[in-house]
Amino acid sequence: MAPDERPDPQALAALVELRRRTVVKPHGPAELERGLTALRARVAGKRSQRPVLVLGVSLGVTMVLVVLAAARLLPALRTPAAESRPPVAVERIEGGALLDGGYLAESGHAGIRLSFSEGTRFALMPGTRGRLREVTRDGAALSIENGAASFQVTPDPTRRWSIEAGPFLVTVKGTVFDVSWDPESERFDLTLRRGRVVVSGPLVGGSVSLRAGQHLAVRLPLAETIVTDTAMEQAAPASPGSTDRSLPAPAQPAAAKRIAARSAPVLQSPSLNHDGPGWQSLLAAGKWDRILAEAERLGVEATLERASSEDLFALADAARYRHRADVARAALLAQRRRFPDSPRSLDAIFLLGRVAELRDGGATRALALYDEYLARSPHGPYAAEALGRKMILLNDEGDPGKARRLAREYLLRFPSGSYVTAARALAGAP
Image (cartoon, rainbow, N blue to C red; front, side, top):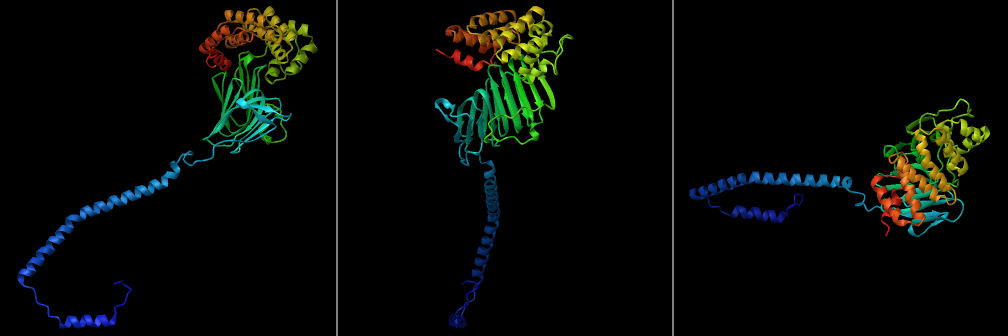
């Protein structure tokens, strides 16, 4: 009977009357004894079962608590893959098209802009040659063969984004930065606006970690890696998706830290008066035209005879970068003639080879100069570049067998060199 259920009055009255009329016969001693024995046995049995019952209840409670704790921890331990998040995909391409092999073809004169499904955006400046090497579930890899680009990567530590610019690799998690690579001058630049990146490649020390507000400049012909703290972070950077496709103008460095420079401090000749900063400083700032203009103002012939060893080298580099092969060659020859015992005299042999490549039909002369440099300075600062250029020229001149042998030698001697990608391709060619 339920606790709140009231008994039927008629049934209750009948039960009372039945009890009153019934005669209950009292139990005898033997029956009472048997009942008492049975009662003692039942009580003893229940006492022996109590520990087992308590242990079972304890184990049950423990298991319930473990299950509840695991249920709470599962969301924290669940991986992104378990959550089945959408994979990264190219959402929109503006100003161009994606061709076979991932090559990006510009259709106008405003550059190419790529937007990805999770918010990341790439912007290639007008005339930039780039290739979307791959798009994976967790990111993408872009290669820049020549030109400049801006990147705005959505922060996410589980994503994988990478940018190749010439022989350099930039790995990012989430950041905003600009990259440029000029294969002719062999100059790499990266300006980090937000976040952190790691740049690896033919750098002094192997890799460089950058923080927001820093600019990295690498000049392979000078074997130089420079990091500067810039003031450009004070202004809001332009979005990669904006209509202005030009790179921001380089800011004047507030403080500079030279990681490595092969050259000694600028040694100016007392008879050669510079108009402003020394030519090494102008070269590092990319002001090549100003160096050439000053040399012409002072007189090229007078400059060649009176300039210091370092100034001659700066003039030669500025002329090479601007394809003034005549001035570059004259400066390098003056270097060898006037400073024959200096290390720069050996370096000039390699750079004369680079100048020879700028001339039509200069491959044969360039190969001879690279051979001379490698013979006289097999472990010199330009040994990797000399071997790499020789490998490329031999392949271009129709001698793939020699080029393949040099490629294998290059991979053994310079596994992290700037020509390692080309060497791998040539070494694996049939």
